[in-house]
Image 1 (spheres, rainbow, N blue to C red):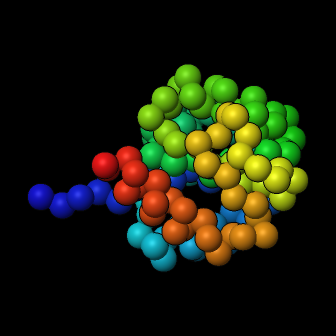
Image 2 (cartoon, rainbow, N blue to C red):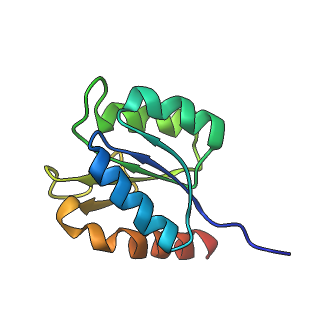
Length: 120
């Protein structure tokens, strides 16, 4: 029996940030199930793929991270939402975890810890 890789949905309006996150997660053997530039595009991806984790920016066009997270909790309740923002300074109540974008190199280890917590 093989264990499956944790799945990740990346939601950020900056294509360069999405690209770097994708590379980091692929290197750490996470499976990227989708990328979206805003919450409106993220919701259908979450419904289709039911990711283990959603990396969610706060400030985005069309629908911010808080509103997006509210919907994600309804359509993919098992997904852990990680607020990934340059403007937030602490974990918002809509997120399961938080990381400031200046600490991007810590994102994969953070998800690794969340995977371990979930398995416990």
